[in-house]
Length: 248
Ligand SMILES: Cc1cc2nc3c(=O)[nH]c(=O)nc-3n(C[C@H](O)[C@H](O)[C@H](O)COP(=O)(O)O)c2cc1C
Image 1 (tube, helix red, strand yellow):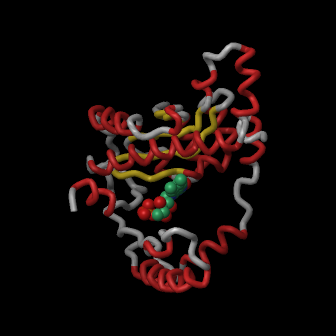
Image 2 (image 1 turned 120 degrees about the vertical axis):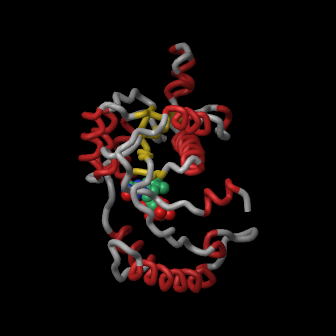
Image 3 (image 1 turned 90 degrees about the vertical axis):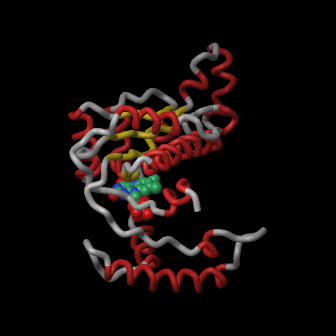
C-alpha cells in the first residue's frame, strides 16, 4: 500500500462541505493534475470551466436540485471539446474535416479525454484532503447549461465536479466485486455473472439498511431495473447533434 492507492481505495462522494473556498495553491495543483493525463491522439479534447459567478452557480444548482452544487469550495464543469482542434483550419480544411469531426468516434474521444482529466483532478483533490462529488444532473437541462456557460459549437457540457473541505464522513459505498467487472480474455457468460450480482445485492442491502443516514431496504439489481425503466434525459441526443457531434 502507498498513499496514492490509499487515497483511491478510500474514495467516497462528499455532498456536504465546509463554507470555505479551496486554497488557491491546492486548486492550482488540482488543475495541473487535470491537464497532465493521457489524451487521445494528443487532442486534449476537453475543457474545464470553473464556475465562480454565484448567479450561474445558483442556476446550475436549480437544474440539478442538489444544494451542494451551490454550497461548496469550488465547482468545475467538464466539457467534451473539439472546438480548439479545428479553429485554426481554413474554410476548405474545415469542410473536408466535417464528416470526420461529426463521427460518433469523436464524441467518444472527447468524452474519454474529459473523463480522464476529471478523474486525475479527483485523485489529486482527494490526496489533498478535499472531498468531491461528480454532478451528472447538470444534464437535467443540458441546453440551459450550454447557454449559461456560453459554450461554442463542438463543445458540450458532460458533468460537474463539486469540491470542498468535507463536512461529513459517509461510509465507503460497496462496489461490485472485481470478478463481476474484470474478465480474462473474453466476456463472461451471464450465468457466471449472476452469482456475483446476487451476493452484491445482499451486501448492498446490508449497507443500505445499516448506514448512518438515509437508510432503506434496497439492492443493486432493483435499483438498476428501476433506473433503466425510467426514460432519462431523452433530449440529450438531439442536443449533442445540434452542437456538431454524432451526426454520422
Ligand atoms: C459521471 C457521474 C455523475 C454523477 N452525478 C451525480 C449527481 O448528479 N449527484 C450526486 O449526488 N452524485 C452523482 N454522482 C456520484 C455517484 O452517485 C457515486 O459516485 C456513486 O453512487 C458511488 O458512490 P461513491 O462515489 O461514494 O463511491 C455521479 C458520479 C459520476 C461518476
